[in-house]
Amino acid sequence: MQNKGLIKLFALLFGLVSIYQLSYTFITSKIESDAETFAASKIPSVEEDYVSKREVLEARYLDSIGKNPILGFTSYEEAKTKELNKGLDLKGGINVTLQISVKDILKGLAANTKNPIFNKALADADAASKNSDDTYLNLFFEAFENIKGDAKLANPDIFANKGLSDEINFQMTDDEVKPVIRRKIDESVVSAFEVLRERIDGFGVTQPNIQREGNSGRIVVELPGARDIARARDLLSSTAQLEFWETYEPGNQNLINFFIQANNELKDIVVSEEEDIVKEESEIDSLLSDVAQDSLDLATERNPLFEKLQLNGPGFAIGIAAIKDTAEIGGWLRMPEIRRLLPAEVQFTKFLWERPSKGSEVAALFALKSNRDNIPRMSGDVVSDARDQFDQFNRPAVGMDMNVKGAKEWEKLTSEANLNNTGIAIVLDNKVYTAPGVTTVGGISGGSSEITGTFTVNETKDIANVLRAGKLPASAEIIDSFVVGPS
Image 1 (cartoon, rainbow, N blue to C red):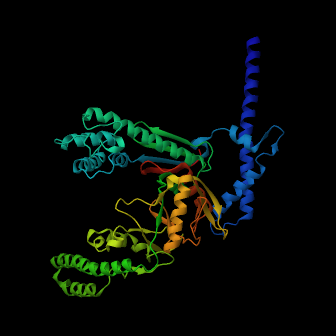
Image 2 (cartoon, helix red, strand yellow; image 1 turned 90 degrees about the vertical axis):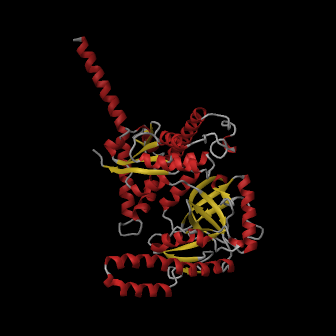
Image 3 (cartoon, helix red, strand yellow; image 1 turned 135 degrees about the vertical axis):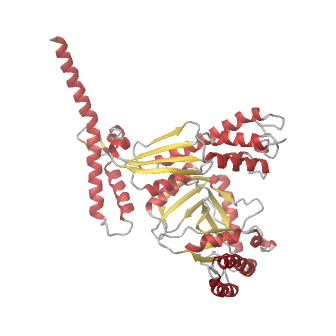
């Protein structure tokens, strides 16, 4: 009888403790539901970008009552830290699997070498990885072994370079080099893991889960309660490669002459390509020969580049084109026979497209002052802080503060831009977000800057988040992503 009494007592105590613990979950669920109802009552679904606006209003609502006492023993902020971890099974959300590019890391460790054996081994590892469960690094080592001849991993133009000189010298054998490379790869994946963790912490979901899958370079992320899978994919896969480049002055004659010559050169290239098509069509059906000849005559009269690209774009842009044509134009501008036409004064010019505004059908092309090594004037490494804010026109923007070194370089760069009547292109992941001119004589001191554009509030939050967390050491490819419904 005494045992039964003890069992009942323990059961009662266990029940009371469970109710106490669950009360935090009930409290947070009720308050968050009230926040959703409040936001929905203020922002109708017919309003543009209503989802993002509601999320902002919900966050403000929760922040405003976060410390208010509830039931005399807790607050929303405290309850949030003690609520039940529902996870994807109970709450639903987004599951994303990323593959950190070991190939990118290897190329970086080898200082982007042009060594043909190294690059052939990478290509062979790419091919082998499609039909193998082995790690990319093992496949690379195997491919290198098969084709190396007299070469070795410790060649000065492979891994025995200046960057790894403290750990690898040219006298080491491949077996001695491999453990060093394995450790470097692991360190880079761990670095990527920590960067992703910091980004996720700023995403706005509670109790996210992130874990590595062995030594494969794969990272699995679970975001309970999240629903915007496109936003999650952008946040996680962005390399956050922030760069600052100087543009050329509007109407630069060297660039205009280049585009005229490029257009003329492309006439012959396009005609040559269409001649090949004509031959193929003639072999298939000789009845089409007249039509094919007409198309050839038309191609000769065309201006391939200027039909798709309008020179003298807005601001410091060199031109403007339909988004559907940007890939083809970019391909033309990367052709060696076209690049050779650049005058000596602008021979290292870097062409990048803007990040087009939402719903736009056109994009501006920028010509940036580059150099032989393709290194920007400044990079995101100088950014000490970033935050989402609103610009002078009350539009969502991203504010940035720079460290002491960055502030000095920023003042110098903006001073030159003011003197030369050029712009400063702020580039994130090879897209120009903004390219303002500088009106301040002597440059902008203090090391503060702003990224403006046609952003939503969520976009500025995410950009600021990835800039604070830092860039990934290698590209991250999303190999799987899906939304999980609550069970």
